[in-house]
Image (cartoon, helix red, strand yellow):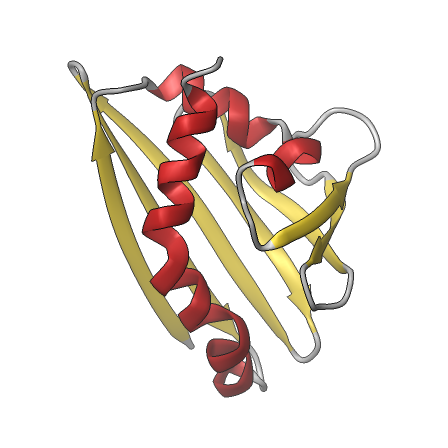
Length: 139
């Protein structure tokens, strides 16, 4: 197993604004530059599957594993001989919002997925989260 996390704090938006952007799965490509497209049938919710096409990568099935408005969104990416668990925890403390993102990879090919996806997600995560905040300002 491999696991890393990071946090970003802001007073520019609140948890409800960020939640609206996270829950709008079909528009993730508008703020995440690593995503080509996402496809979901119906409204997002707990245990709902959707598909994500990363730039330069294969279409991946993802399952929403946590969906608690406005504070927690988590999903599981189904990889070859592995799984990647991603969670966003939104903690509002007065005017300050803290966004904690955790990525955990498990399975026989953890070492590979860590190098191919995990380390890139963590290193680019704070900037990606800033783009999420910018998108949330419009909500």
